[in-house]
Length: 178
Image 1: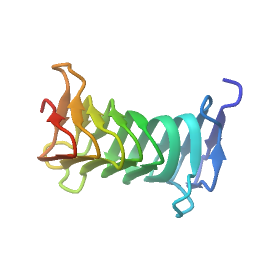
Image 2: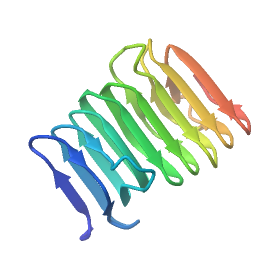
Image 3: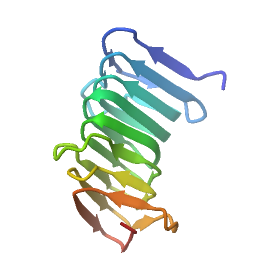
Image 4: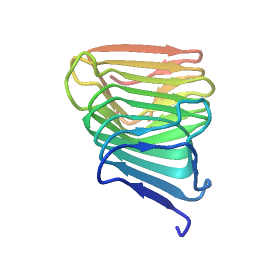
């Protein structure tokens, strides 16, 4: 839409203090280094859809409807979402992934692609459940999901949750294919 926000660097990283496009517009950030917030608990990025791409790590506080985040080099992805969110595609080339949400989380695709014991995937909600479609930490990384509600799959036999170790903790029930 016409009010989308796009930020790009061809060298160096990006530090975000406050970027807001509203719930109906998208924010795209592309960095030749890392993408990081201001280090406080306040929201760094607000938008309907967030598309974050960095050569290094990503560490931001968000308020978004959907998030796609990709690191193309070594670096962790850390996202603290204020409320509910859909993780459309979160891919760490060589790093761990940690996403927390203050509401329901739908995990369409989350993957740490380098097979390493340090490249764990951790997903947690402080309110609402977690629906898992595809989560992978390789053969050596662990997957940990903690939910303030239930943890469910999407009802499709193609649902994949894979890792060296799997820990699921829920206040409600757990119904997931692995």
